[in-house]
Length: 522
Image (cartoon, rainbow, N blue to C red; front, side):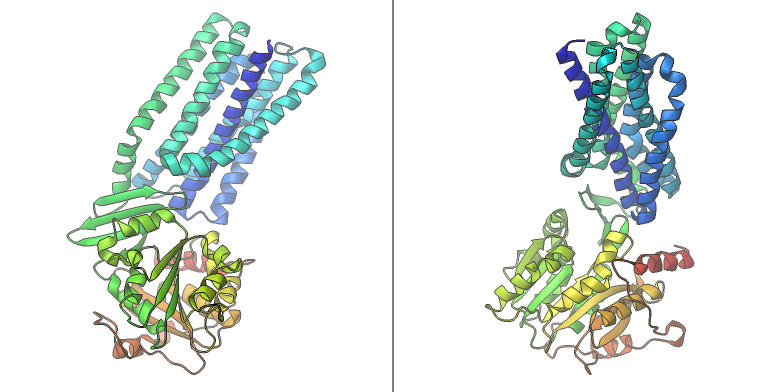
């Protein structure tokens, strides 16, 4: 075999390896969107994939008699099944409402196909068809390098190219198509002379058929996903986007607009004012000037802060730039263009890193003209801690760093803490974690939000201070002194309790949330 043929073979092997890793990463991404993406789900997928590699190597033994033909037929099957896997699993989830078991089964099947590749390639080398015996060891080393470099490229291509540019479904299909093209190159340029005509014809037809199916999927995936997605939501979907970080969906029906992130309801315009007013105003004092919002990418918390004349500046830290863009366009009517106000500075960054690496301190110093780095009001408006990634932002370590940005003389920090009734351990875990992190006075309260139920908040405030609203208030639809006073009362059947803090080492709050949902039958 000539040098350029060997080069093409190695490039094709690298592409196949890249595609194989993309399939695994796509399954993990899909699990994050559909199942929350906890350590359990991710571990099952990764461990299942690795175990399936070994199973595939074992299953390859009967195929070693026809290594070239078997290898290329495996690539035809792998490119097709890997390419359609994300779309099929999404449709299954939309139809059946459950996907973890199906995801694990898909992982095992795809991993088994990937596992057959190396033994078949090694058999080709050992049979002396591609290199002589003296060079077999060197060739195998080169093959491994191509395989690992391909996996590296696939690992980089998924988060930085395929997912943000094409989305989960089309990105996976494109990877499968690339897998098919690489196998076609191997067939027609490198291995054709080592196979009888019927094998070449069979392989070529199989690869072309798989490629045609994937091309059709690429062209029609938007319609398939749109139809499947609509079955997940009661109201018509008016906007949907799969970003690098999450699945954003907006629905609307008879004036009720709703925002969903990864399938979880974030707000309904029918009653979001109850939640937003309860979150924001108890954390504001008459002396508050500089506010910090962690999360709040919908712009609703910023909207309410801007109604307070004493607020001079707002720093809003949101991870997903796409969420900010959606807030400025699709949700602009709801947040009244809050992010366009000159008093609001939106930072697209990971909140944990932003606080830890001192960027939060630098921002506060700039606001107070080089003085002590503090914010008067800090609002933590994050999604529920349904994954270990989100649990970081509910940890003792994060709260401890965040408290350093709160004015120790007059500052207040509030955290949305989930349902005080449905997930009471989450609510109490946040309260206990704030206390352990250094908050000397945590005041819990809860209100009824029809679309959410009994929803809770924890306010970290000055010692001896009780729940109260600032003297100067805009015209509010829900919150007043009487409502706030009642919000601080908890009945005997939902009494407060002290729990161990949630930490980076032991994110207990994730299991608290899941246990609460299981007990509630959700």
